[in-house]
Image 1: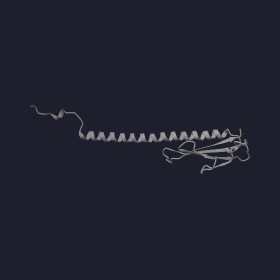
Image 2: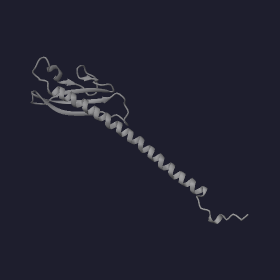
Image 3: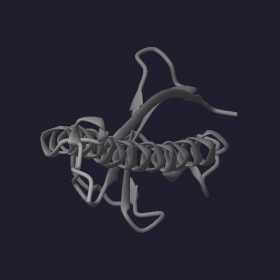
Length: 141
Protein backbone atom coordinates (compact mmCIF):
# COMPACT_ATOMS: atom_id res chain seq x y z
CA UNK A 1 0.00 0.00 0.00
CA UNK A 2 1.26 3.46 -0.92
CA UNK A 3 1.44 6.19 1.69
CA UNK A 4 -1.31 8.87 1.54
CA UNK A 5 0.02 12.30 0.54
CA UNK A 6 -2.16 15.08 2.03
CA UNK A 7 -0.17 17.88 0.43
CA UNK A 8 -2.06 17.67 -2.87
CA UNK A 9 -5.57 17.60 -1.36
CA UNK A 10 -7.73 20.62 -2.14
CA UNK A 11 -10.84 21.88 -0.31
CA UNK A 12 -12.03 24.25 2.36
CA UNK A 13 -10.99 24.22 5.96
CA UNK A 14 -13.56 24.25 8.72
CA UNK A 15 -12.67 27.87 9.60
CA UNK A 16 -13.24 29.00 6.00
CA UNK A 17 -16.63 27.30 5.93
CA UNK A 18 -17.65 28.91 9.25
CA UNK A 19 -16.59 32.38 8.08
CA UNK A 20 -18.51 31.95 4.81
CA UNK A 21 -21.57 30.78 6.74
CA UNK A 22 -21.46 33.83 9.05
CA UNK A 23 -21.15 36.21 6.09
CA UNK A 24 -24.04 34.50 4.29
CA UNK A 25 -26.20 34.62 7.44
CA UNK A 26 -25.57 38.35 7.93
CA UNK A 27 -26.52 39.00 4.31
CA UNK A 28 -29.71 36.96 4.53
CA UNK A 29 -30.80 38.65 7.76
CA UNK A 30 -30.23 42.07 6.15
CA UNK A 31 -32.33 41.03 3.14
CA UNK A 32 -35.12 39.80 5.42
CA UNK A 33 -35.17 43.16 7.24
CA UNK A 34 -35.34 44.99 3.91
CA UNK A 35 -38.29 42.83 2.91
CA UNK A 36 -40.10 43.74 6.14
CA UNK A 37 -39.44 47.46 5.59
CA UNK A 38 -40.60 47.19 1.98
CA UNK A 39 -43.84 45.52 3.06
CA UNK A 40 -44.54 48.25 5.65
CA UNK A 41 -43.87 51.00 3.10
CA UNK A 42 -46.14 49.30 0.57
CA UNK A 43 -48.95 49.10 3.15
CA UNK A 44 -48.42 52.76 4.09
CA UNK A 45 -48.65 53.79 0.43
CA UNK A 46 -51.77 51.69 -0.12
CA UNK A 47 -53.52 53.12 2.94
CA UNK A 48 -52.53 56.72 2.12
CA UNK A 49 -53.86 56.30 -1.42
CA UNK A 50 -57.16 54.99 -0.08
CA UNK A 51 -57.36 57.92 2.37
CA UNK A 52 -56.63 60.48 -0.36
CA UNK A 53 -59.38 58.97 -2.51
CA UNK A 54 -61.82 59.32 0.40
CA UNK A 55 -60.82 62.96 0.89
CA UNK A 56 -61.20 63.71 -2.80
CA UNK A 57 -64.60 62.01 -3.01
CA UNK A 58 -65.94 64.15 -0.13
CA UNK A 59 -64.55 67.31 -1.76
CA UNK A 60 -66.15 66.36 -5.08
CA UNK A 61 -69.45 65.72 -3.32
CA UNK A 62 -69.48 69.10 -1.52
CA UNK A 63 -68.23 71.13 -4.49
CA UNK A 64 -71.35 70.15 -6.42
CA UNK A 65 -73.74 71.42 -3.71
CA UNK A 66 -75.39 74.83 -4.03
CA UNK A 67 -75.11 77.18 -1.04
CA UNK A 68 -78.50 78.72 -1.78
CA UNK A 69 -80.57 75.57 -2.45
CA UNK A 70 -82.59 74.96 0.73
CA UNK A 71 -82.68 71.19 0.20
CA UNK A 72 -78.90 70.77 0.03
CA UNK A 73 -77.40 73.88 1.63
CA UNK A 74 -77.20 72.23 5.06
CA UNK A 75 -74.38 69.99 3.84
CA UNK A 76 -72.21 73.03 3.06
CA UNK A 77 -73.23 75.13 6.05
CA UNK A 78 -70.37 76.72 7.98
CA UNK A 79 -69.29 74.47 10.83
CA UNK A 80 -67.74 71.14 11.64
CA UNK A 81 -64.58 70.09 13.43
CA UNK A 82 -61.40 68.24 12.51
CA UNK A 83 -60.69 67.09 16.06
CA UNK A 84 -64.06 65.78 17.21
CA UNK A 85 -67.19 64.33 15.67
CA UNK A 86 -69.87 66.91 14.90
CA UNK A 87 -73.26 65.78 13.59
CA UNK A 88 -73.47 65.92 9.76
CA UNK A 89 -69.73 66.75 9.51
CA UNK A 90 -68.31 63.23 9.86
CA UNK A 91 -68.80 59.74 8.51
CA UNK A 92 -67.12 56.38 8.10
CA UNK A 93 -67.39 55.72 4.37
CA UNK A 94 -65.41 52.45 4.45
CA UNK A 95 -64.23 50.22 7.23
CA UNK A 96 -60.90 51.26 8.67
CA UNK A 97 -61.27 55.03 8.14
CA UNK A 98 -63.17 57.90 9.72
CA UNK A 99 -63.72 61.14 7.80
CA UNK A 100 -64.28 64.61 9.30
CA UNK A 101 -64.65 67.93 7.56
CA UNK A 102 -64.90 71.59 8.45
CA UNK A 103 -66.36 74.41 6.38
CA UNK A 104 -65.27 77.95 7.21
CA UNK A 105 -66.30 81.34 5.88
CA UNK A 106 -63.87 83.59 4.07
CA UNK A 107 -63.99 87.18 5.26
CA UNK A 108 -65.84 89.41 2.83
CA UNK A 109 -67.00 86.51 0.65
CA UNK A 110 -70.49 85.04 0.66
CA UNK A 111 -70.17 82.66 -2.29
CA UNK A 112 -66.80 81.17 -1.35
CA UNK A 113 -65.83 78.98 1.63
CA UNK A 114 -62.84 76.93 2.71
CA UNK A 115 -63.28 73.21 3.09
CA UNK A 116 -60.88 71.04 5.06
CA UNK A 117 -61.34 67.27 5.00
CA UNK A 118 -59.41 64.88 7.25
CA UNK A 119 -59.35 61.11 6.96
CA UNK A 120 -58.24 59.33 10.10
CA UNK A 121 -57.30 55.64 10.10
CA UNK A 122 -59.08 53.71 12.83
CA UNK A 123 -56.03 51.50 13.40
CA UNK A 124 -53.45 53.88 14.84
CA UNK A 125 -50.16 52.41 13.61
CA UNK A 126 -47.73 55.01 12.27
CA UNK A 127 -45.79 52.34 10.40
CA UNK A 128 -48.68 51.44 8.09
CA UNK A 129 -51.30 54.22 8.50
CA UNK A 130 -51.19 57.99 8.34
CA UNK A 131 -53.78 60.72 8.73
CA UNK A 132 -54.50 62.65 5.54
CA UNK A 133 -55.79 66.22 5.46
CA UNK A 134 -56.63 68.38 2.46
CA UNK A 135 -57.87 71.98 2.36
CA UNK A 136 -59.49 73.59 -0.65
CA UNK A 137 -61.82 76.43 -1.56
CA UNK A 138 -65.39 75.75 -2.65
CA UNK A 139 -67.73 78.20 -4.28
CA UNK A 140 -71.42 78.38 -4.93
CA UNK A 141 -71.97 76.85 -8.39
